[in-house]
Image 1: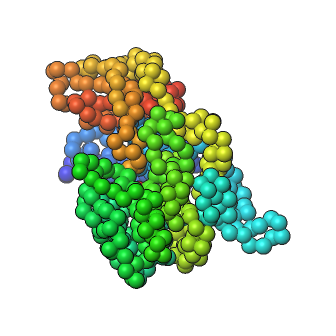
Image 2: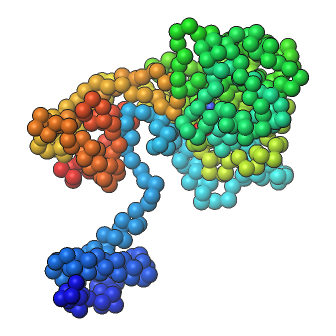
Length: 462
Ligand SMILES: *Cc1c(COP(=O)(O)O)cnc(C)c1O
């Protein structure tokens, strides 16, 4: 330590007086610039203690600039989702339609009629902006909207089964990610869980025998992210509805994804729609806004008017309500459903589902030379068939034929390099998120629309 001469390092004040120092202060503010220069000088001192030469003032300024640029980088950033999972919960689920983006920008920039009725100026209700559309599209008597589907389930149970019992089949005690576990939500809603049947088989008489004067609700939950197969029995929804009706107990169907259209039009398996669940006789149905629906995070409660109104009037609703931005996005998204014939163009989620393998194959061939150049020596690269997933626990076993760019380490670097390659892709200006399987890194192209940006950054990194 003794013997290292720090006296030739410039002072913070001297650096701030340089042109580049003044530019940093002008761009980031004097305090940020000062702190960054101090940090850069600390780093220089540490390096000198380990034997490095005293850096030139310009080098300290460059280091400070890099430090400030890194600090200015937003935490939540745009990425390329090439994982092959279209509705990726960790990557923000549905990409919103242009109409929703425009509506959100307008609502951010200006005051709105959020709770204001223009005809007469009386105080309106915020959910009115989507209530009519949801009723029209689902055929439900009434509708309300909350923060997400987990909140919708909580609100329904807390409103209609609080202090009472809720009957659920043992085959439907779902966990959707760590954050949503049915038994846990029931505890929060203060309703006692009454499990009936066995994991694989539940009969109508199991429900019937469990109904007592303490029953508040029968809950049917969509087993969104798993399948029970083999020797199984599930009570069909209409039979459960008839039983509930006979005993004067409401039937609540938590649909999870809740699509409003027949997905077989887009090459997917037919999933029960919200309309189906209502026709089957559920008194209340809940579903998400940002799964198959393709909108912003939200949860809907639809069904019988008096039951929905009771949910909307619950004090809890205030804590679970949507803000003007998401209501704007939701309204614009729902409006697109008035023209189902163009949904596969206007709604990004359906647009992604609707892409066919030859389309992705052609795209992969276009991108292959740039991909090879980016990889450089030591990699086998090419185009391969793969299968995309829907994601978010929707249609867990259903996949879509897709195509990917892949990279596999050549024999001499076997087993090494895949993680490093994935990290390199994540460090691009717009991080690229792929997936590693069977000793390859794959980029499923189903969700790649902005090909120009993708190509440009591969090119500049090569
Ligand atoms: C996804 C899902 C939920 C949770 O919905 P969020 O909108 O993520 O809160 C609840 N129930 C079922 C059946 C689901 O599939």
